[in-house]
Length: 340
Image 1 (tube, rainbow, N blue to C red):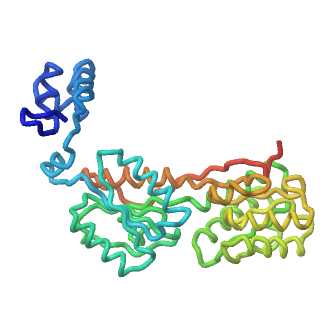
Image 2 (cartoon, rainbow, N blue to C red):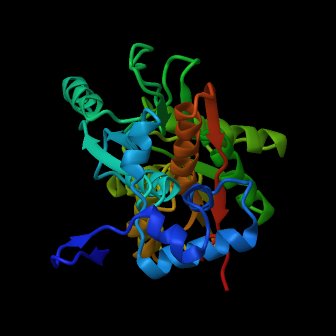
Image 3 (cartoon, rainbow, N blue to C red):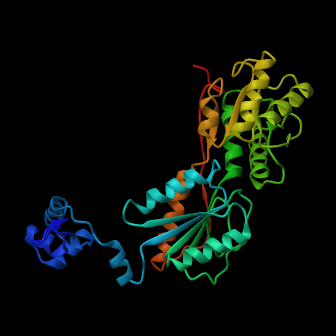
């Protein structure tokens, strides 16, 4: 900002930056916009001049000139959930502070509310939209009449031509089990959540694959229930009653795992000495209070958000990417599977 002779404050212009840097306005513009045909020394000199003058580029004006507004929409169905917030954080990181304005709306798993928010966002002339689901079950596509690029995150679109970025739950179940097998565990139980959720079924598939590859079978059936600590306690209790020799438990979520740990402690079963326990999601509120510290499969939700934003930018640039992209998970090892 600079001050006029009348004492008014006005924004610094690109011309003033160019004059201080000793270059033309066109060169200053190229340097600040990251164009390739600018010498590194010139680019550095222009940036230093811009910093010295506290120059703020008018991204909105530039975007409108290019037929864009520099704004995107983030439409979530689970704003308070453990999945959507890190996904949204990753997306915002990719958008970049100050370069893209983000409008966030919560549809609360309501189709009518979703349509209302969609109309409102389009009324603000957004350049693109990321839709974050509340489960990994496929959701209905917004269709191809939406006039801006759309990327679906966490819950894939049911239209294979749409761009979707989702967690790889089958791989998550497999690597969780492989981690237990590398520790020498052979009698593995699986206590999971609601069987109507795709995530629960996919993780169970991965667990079964890893055991089959090792020539083993699951100890008893997959014990499906609810995504709660109470079910974790009840589910592992039933598994132990059926097979007291269980030496590992794959839990459908970190919340279930907390209940499993409580039940094992109440029975005087040492973790991980007697039974190793692993959860899913690497959810901090559950991890922080678990005893011992819970090993968990991190689904890389922030990376999911960043990839969704990257694919959205590609669509905005006229280079849309189609199909489902799966984000690889990783095991975060803590005390519930590895002592010391």
